[in-house]
Length: 103
Picture 1 (spheres, rainbow, N blue to C red):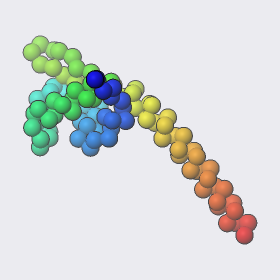
Picture 2 (picture 1 turned 135 degrees about the horizontal axis):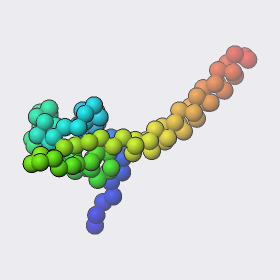
Picture 3 (picture 1 turned 180 degrees about the vertical axis):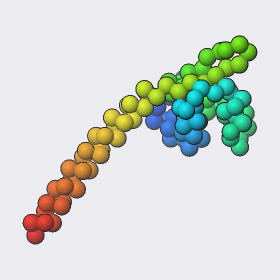
Picture 4 (picture 1 turned 90 degrees about the vertical axis):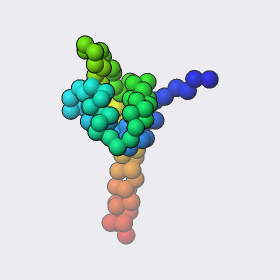
């Protein structure tokens, strides 16, 4: 059974968040990405695969090297989800503030 990955799974891991942050600045080849982390190359490859499956990065071949590019449009889903709760809690806290001010 194949598991479907989503953007929330991708950003749940601090290493994957760091990879996204790294390649958001500029496309990097896989070796450069792996060199920036103190984990094994297979572990970095697994993180890259998950990020690719979630659509947060794309890999393209340039000569003999493979480069990672950030595709941050997928983070819009996270932003929209967080915004709902930010609005909810702001409204709740405003109501509490009004209640306390009236007492």
